[in-house]
Amino acid sequence: MRGMATSCSFDITSNVDLQEVDNALNQARKEVAQRYDFKGSKSSIEFDEKESTLTLVSDDAFKLNALWEVVQTRLVRRNVPVQNMKREEIIAAGGNTVKQEISLQQGIPSDAARDIVKFLKDAKLKKVQASIQGDQLRVTSPSRDELQDVMRLLREQDFGVALQFGNFRS
Image (cartoon, rainbow, N blue to C red; front, side, top):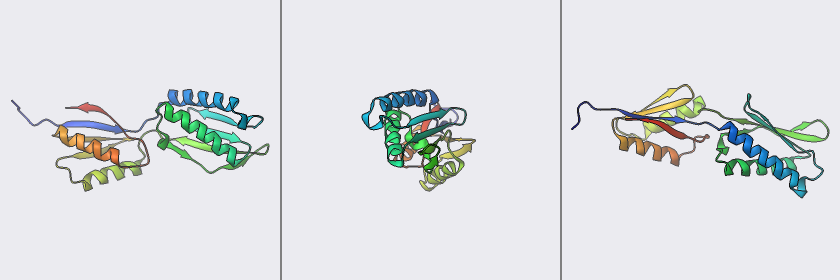
C-alpha cells in the first residue's frame, strides 16, 4: 500500500579514474619501449595528474599518431572513457620533435549539461525533471520506469563525454 507519492532520482556524472589512466599509460610506455617501430625514436608519454593532461612527444606526426593509438588501446582496455579526452593540435617541439597535449574532461561541461537537459525536455517524458548541479546532473521522476527510459535514451546519444549513472534514490 502506498502513502505519499515518492520521487526517485539518479545522478549523471562523467568522471575518469586517474589511477586507471596512470596504469594504462605505464602499460603503453612498456609497449612503446618494446616495439621495433619506436626503436631509437624520441617518443614519450607524460601525465600531469593535477592538470589532468597528457603530453605525447615523438619524432613526427605519423609516429605521434601511432603513439596515440597505443595509448588509446590501453585506455580502452582499462575501461577509461576515451571520449573524455580532448586532443589539441600537434605542434613543433624542441630537438626535431612534435608534441600534442590531451586534456582529460572531468565532470560534464556546462554546454553538454544544457544539451542533456534540452534533450530530456524534447523527449517529452512525463514528470521527468533534470537539473544541473555543478558538473553533474540530477534526474528525478515519481516513476522508476521513467528513469530507466531516461538512461536508455541517454545511452543512445552522444554528448561528447562518457556518461555514468549512479546515486540512485527512491
